[in-house]
Length: 373
Image (cartoon, rainbow, N blue to C red; front, top):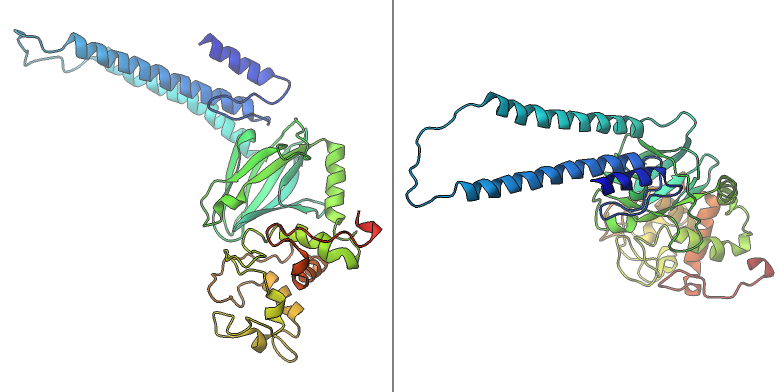
């Protein structure tokens, strides 16, 4: 008992993240100590009653076991006011105390401070988009240290759920409505090493690519975070047009690789291998769509898409308009998430797929100019 109380006290006063335990991972948010404390008390009470009830059961089974020559009574006590009052009032009081602390914790978790830093979160099959107030976007969550952060969340297709174990927060994302969660982490993690940051999971099964939604949460000092957010908002604009396809293409393709391959492997979506040949009327451009239409019937002067580039742009912004045969309507729209320069980078990459590693998407050639360093 004393060791547990000592552990709770140390966990709530330690100058750093609470250490991981058998039950819980590292606690790295302002919520963690109170959540862990309540969980430990619930577990302690549960184990105390389990041990007591088991011990009493074993004792009474042994004490009142059948003995040879024992005469059984057919009558017995039918009522015991103090006993019934005790086993009713006692558990009710315990549950009431736990409810009060639990409800207070719920209110704290549900009420973000007015000065919180808002990040818009969109969950889709199968990934996350985090959008920051300055227009920056990222696939992993990056937050400033020592500042309350509110996630304004929605789902673009099916139910998802955002769970950050180290912050002790979890909230469902529902199509057609907004949900929120907030946290504050005072302990920077860095973001340079593969082991930096905390885990972020989707904990609502959302289809075959559900496990691809695992992400990282990085906590940065305010100055470093501001510099990162500024660079993240402008990185695409700083790339020269001639370097766009090999510098920006692979980075943007990282959001596509969960569903699309480069080597011809069938995935959730059609492979990119040979895509430029298909859209320009080359090999494999026959009856390509579920509605019976073909690339030739859709792309060309006077047709729905004047150029192959127009078709690819439409397929990214309105992916359900023409479904490739054999694939379902599962791709979310990327309208508002990628600009024209990003579309140009992806199209440029599609035109020169032979220059990229079909497994990783990395560019295989040496930088052609000094500015490529």
